[in-house]
Image 1 (cartoon, rainbow, N blue to C red):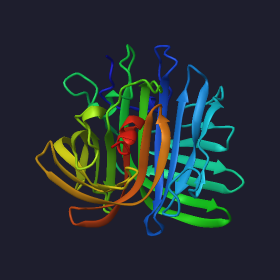
Image 2 (cartoon, rainbow, N blue to C red; image 1 turned 45 degrees about the horizontal axis):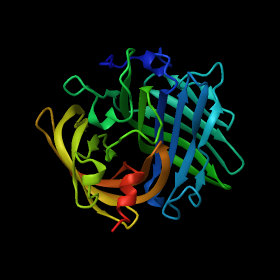
Image 3 (tube, one colour; image 1 turned 90 degrees about the vertical axis):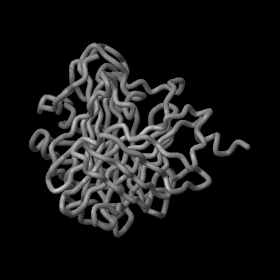
Length: 335
């Protein structure tokens, strides 16, 4: 398998594919207003071999946790992919657009619609962190979502700050130095409900001084054996950035502190050690969330605005993607 072991500006472009119709070129980025418990998600992915795009904003706070009642939801499926589009330089038919200012460093995100408009610019605060192979195989945090391929595939994550303005139903909000994470993935990603996937999570937190962390975790249990509540997941990868020094997460665990009747997480506790022997202990509290059905085939995700206490930082902004399949969800309602 060809897996990228470094990141360069060429990874801001569409990659050479193996012809698989499920070849995926994707990215997400977000912005927060923690005082209002507001989180905005900007997610976009392309199927170049199908000539389709899926993209748009989702904005929520504590007033609604479903696509039907959140502040704003306009994620559109199966848009035409413009002939001149590139990964971070495009404008789609639904009004969503991205412009590269400086590769791997800065990007402008704009959107125009009747009830929502924004102009937001991301500036990196860390270098991209690529996801490494584990013993020659895909990291378990991504193994269920990107197929092996004869051409290079890869994934990286990068922390930064978002600035700009958001106008939502007539109210204009300033977004000022909002901590954010952006990711980037490329490779064949089948979106089918008959693909076996494990439960897991993807979490990051970022303090005002730049200290930050990211973890991937997966359950070691198949759905038939997974009780969902009271479990501890193994951390399979990520990074820990402290005092300007970034280290790969070497080991650790993540434990959800509680769940509602529908499975939504209330918070989590993360204990990890990086390659330099530094210990991370982070306690997260979920402030608001959106339930995203059918994110990838049979996968449902609680995408959460979360705040963290870690390394002396209090209420540092962050996010949790807590995901599992509909089989897991149904188990919570079976006797």
